[in-house]
Image (cartoon, rainbow over the protein chains, first blue to last red):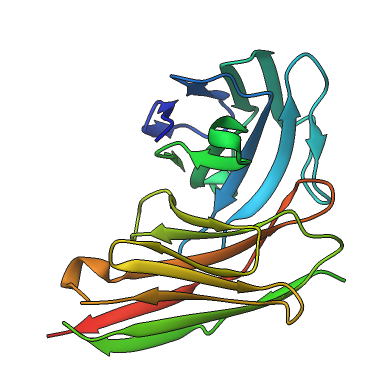
Length: 117
Length: 109
């Protein structure tokens, strides 16, 4: 199947710093990438939808100035958590949508675990 | 509103068969997905149904009835490694995935 990578897999940072997470589709071009957040024992929550070359669409309640998303190319999207606080500690997962094999499918990256001290 | 319902938790025995149901009400339909998520890991793709009927992939099968807004994931010959959460998701008319809360499957020896 298609491969999506995320970097870094683990981040520990101090409160007030910014953290950048990269999401790459390794063997396909993704016109659309998604960023999710998952708190322990809870469902995936969609944060934003990112289309290559255009501004991201944020879900209600997600601050676009705090969670900066850049979809610079068909294989790379970045999420920057600005001025991170302990409540931003979570598991951040990206996914990339592809129509390969004749079907629309989303493939997930391995996730990035963020801990803000 | 849009809604995906699936049981919160199920328990089954190693070697047995289990069926995880999912019902949905969404604005439009462009396919239904099942994902497996082990604790602490990202979801992995299991199956995709867009037409009515049963899709079989090894020990896992997925069924869809669009008229009933219903799907199930069938797991046969259960193994301990199948203990995970199983997520049902529907792609709506805007090609956005609407997620169920997931079903935690516990496998007992």
